[in-house]
Image (cartoon, rainbow, N blue to C red; front, side, top):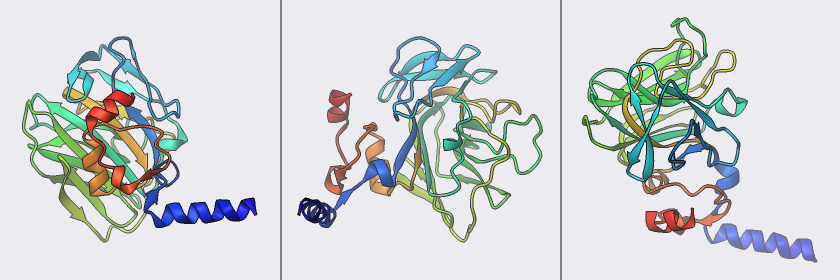
Length: 260
């Protein structure tokens, strides 16, 4: 009888439009950079994927509070090479970025194809950044490097960028608005070895194309976020929201900040 009651209760929740974010869309990594000092970026996802600030990454302020500042020369953040970062498809990658010069190619965050020192194809995994005054997206699909430049990124302006890939369609968002939709990309993202998730650089070993400017609210999801969810994420992410009604996805930043 108890099992029947639980089953009916679950059915009622699903009928009411509840979404299991903790299961359907796992938050793999989340840096909000609120530590204020120190050489560690704490992972708010609960997975322990903490990042190490390398070569003098500085602390600064961002749209959500604390942020990190990169000199564009040699500093970056290394979050380690957990297998959790090698997401084949159904992925979302997002961050707030403020590039001092949005012209040159600059990697903001993501997981490269590998950590190797060579730049041989394929060399990307799933990464986002800026290039030519636009959002840049790099993804290796079925062993083929794909690169997309879309939307508009202004130098010296905080801008939210996000990327999703479901195994068929790669979508890019700038400030919560879809700016590119590349379909017919059937296949999985491929990786070589055990690459590390990095912030502010192309990869740990094949260094270059460092980010020059500030970055905040870096998040990696094992799941495709909807446009509405990405817009809500722009106001801050609440880790651990295992079950939430869809109507609550657009929670205000004031509530998120209060609950942190």
